[in-house]
Length: 149
Image (cartoon, rainbow, N blue to C red; front, side, top):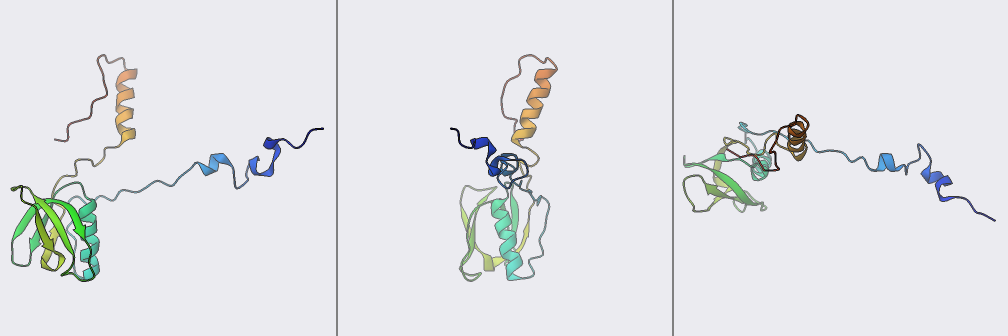
């Protein structure tokens, strides 16, 4: 006597909600390009959103403080407090090794001025270039990262 086969179960048939071909498709992510963007910062919410994007950005930004001071550098940390005075970003300035802590309440303007060194570069693009070189018979190719400059 034999029982039903595992493959004959309804969950393994075409079009079922447990079809492995449909389960393994995950939505991709859309990377927003902010290089060159100068946000309005008209409200507290816009400032917070812009500084969150500055933290995620891989290039340098220019922060203009309310006292007129301009700081070009990389935002490497941020703390979002309950008020703008208790929230701050930490910046590595281009011209100094000193780390600066700037309160959100002191920021008058923000600009994404630096080049994003990883923009347009993905693992898939890198592998595609490698295989293009390999299939054309180019000799001496190897897997080395591209320069960021």
